[in-house]
Amino acid sequence: MAHFSDTGKSKGKDYCIFFNSQWARLPQDLNKASRLPIYDLTTSVLCSPSDVPDGGFPNRIAMVMRGNCTFYEKVRLAQINGAKGLLIVSKDRLTPPAGNKTQYEEIDIPVALLSYSDMLDISKTFGKGRMVAMYAPSEPVLDYNMVIIFLMAVGTVAIGGYWAGILPEREIVDVTPIMICVFVVMCCSMLVLLYFFYDSLAIWVIAIFCVASSVGLHSCLWPFIRMLLLSAFCIAVSITWMVFRNEDQWAWVLQDALGIAFCLYMLKTVRLPTFKACTLLLSVLFIYDVFFVFITPFLTKSGESIMVEVAAGPSDSSVHEKLPMVLKVPRLNFSPLALCDRPFSLLGFGDILVPGLLVVYCHRFDILTQSSRIYFVACTIAYGIGLLITFVALAVMQMGQPALLYLVPCTLLTSLTVALWRRELPQFWTGSGFVVNTKDSPHYPPQETPPARKDEVENKSN
Image: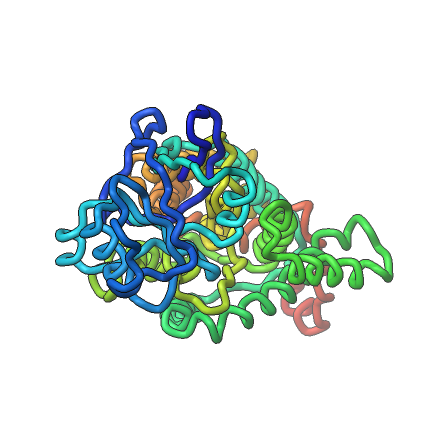
């Protein structure tokens, strides 16, 4: 943050800046930051010694335009001419000013980027004798938005699992082991393609999300609102989100609503027929999630994980689009950093759908074996506990977490424990309870027994 004020006045105004702590660190508290006069050189780009004014910038913070030279060239000229810091005004998207290790070691003054619109506001608000103090306030370890994400995720899994468990067989699509393998290969391929061709594929992912979320919303509302205009309404909602998707103030609410509808649709449509299939899918995606979050940073040039880079959007992307395949909630704390681009906490759809399919299986097994929904309740609670562990790990490690690392063991082990405790593991593992009890279940229509043939009757009588 950059706190501007007039000379002799204590009150001022904060502005968002992007800085890189590898050049020089900033204090976290405004009261500990040095309040220095600004040298306004926004008529220059400070790319050559000829741009330096007579006398340099003694004990001042220079403010210059971006230009075409490197950050190192600018900050080096500022430092050798007495500046105590450098503010670079940019008309483009703000990104932290980068350099290399040798350049970082040579420079010991802070350098930061300030938006052009903020520079105009500063010129209008403060006089020529304006002062600035640069500081980097810390964010709270946990944010209240985690409560909203928790309620949305657990609510979606619980409602989707309950809803899917009471649907008739004809509305469900069985998933086979071959389909699981193909799905995982497609996930890996798509993630890698997005990493290398993000700008080209992002708009297609957005279009697919609009279509899929329209279908999901229609499927969720159709049992309650049987109207001819329902399809048009669902499509209109998706198009509205697509048009206003970058409105951070409110578009996230619409995205989350569409995302939840999509997840509910998938949970009530896709079915894993056995616990063996559930274990296979969750185990493979467990490895997939851990690999693309924790292992890929050692394989990429930037040192960033492919999963986090794709989910948050590459910093060097030219389209500046974010993939909508997540639930997102803005930070709700009152940190000064709220002035900057509104940061969001994210939870991927996969972190809802993958454990959710196990919850669906548990509920169906409960119904068809008349077990008072103990599997469903236990697995749903385990999902909530796994999500809480994910949030704690996020706060402790201060980096993106593979949520399936915590969700998969919690849900699988809990379901397995319940099956062992009830001595139903063979039936739970193979799904044989579905075959035995299908005719007795009140949720499935009775099947008529075909009449016996005449020769069969005669054989029985003999």
